Image (cartoon, rainbow, N blue to C red):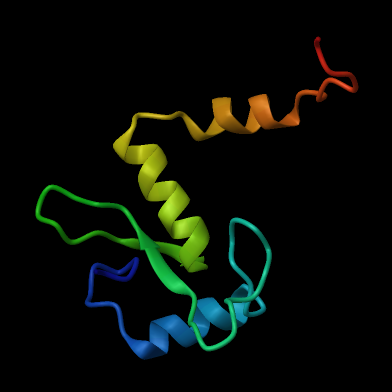
Length: 91
């Protein structure tokens, strides 16, 4: 993984992102589960090394990976989730 300058991502880079994000996952806004760290979210480049975008919690990282694997557009998913839910059940 690389930092935005194209250099290897370091613990110093991690600490800067962690502080900039107030220790919260960029996607869900929650801290990492107890005993876990936020993980670097990065672009997967053709060489297998990507530039780190932000820190995310493991559940959000997993969801993001599944969406990419299955070709799900995150914006479309978010729009679908924002739709009102039915208030009644069909018989």
